[in-house]
Image (cartoon, rainbow, N blue to C red):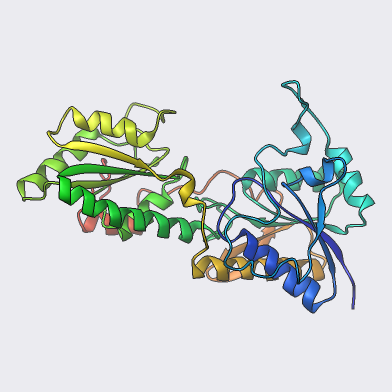
Length: 352
């Protein structure tokens, strides 16, 4: 049996299921195959700190991780070794230093769990410095083109749907227009799925710049039918026709536009980081576990340089180089768009 010694890290924003991936790699690679594994704290930074912040990953240290949110390894959005903060407002390239640290630790390669930015760094480490890498994708926005789903997405949809259920009762009690802002800077998958599952009346997503007049008409039509309240889901990247995404909040922007055309109070709720926290739902626990097991299989087969993905319910892989391309956006002709429109949900744009 070949013994491998590997490193593992998590980068970018946290997502429910990160710990489940770590657990799966350790339980299969270390527990079943006798490998050694170490974790780099706070993404790539663990290799660059002095002293290095590397922790052994064993069956004991990975107990109880399946249901835990966040990541026991810690993470950061400011850990690019090719453009590392120099403390004086600039950046310095420390990638060669990182590669040397990986080799000094006797690591065969790295399992890198993270989103597009993290995977681009991993691919560059492999290309520029010869560091073998297996990528495991992570994005709660579900906007990675190489994979049908990414872990964390369904947990986020669950949180957003629960929020909609709660906002419905308040909206109905007070005759208000309640706007819920969810994540989705470029892609509106969370807003679409949560809006459909949570019975929203209107959905605003980045892929369909909205005509606020259509939303106003929807609210007025509901009022004429005796429905004195409306629930709206807004992706954080949504914006009006002829406008642009705002830094001041997409839901607040839409609420301000609505208030000039309706005689109902508006209230805005921004879920923010609540969507990232808490335990992963069963689907994400299973998917993250499958991804972790696949990462071990790829290492065992010597297939470094690949990204784990889900393709028609089969966990497979694609070349890491080029996998982190443009985000997968919601096609305005997507079947779920048509389904939502069929049950009366207004998108602020023609979708038929």
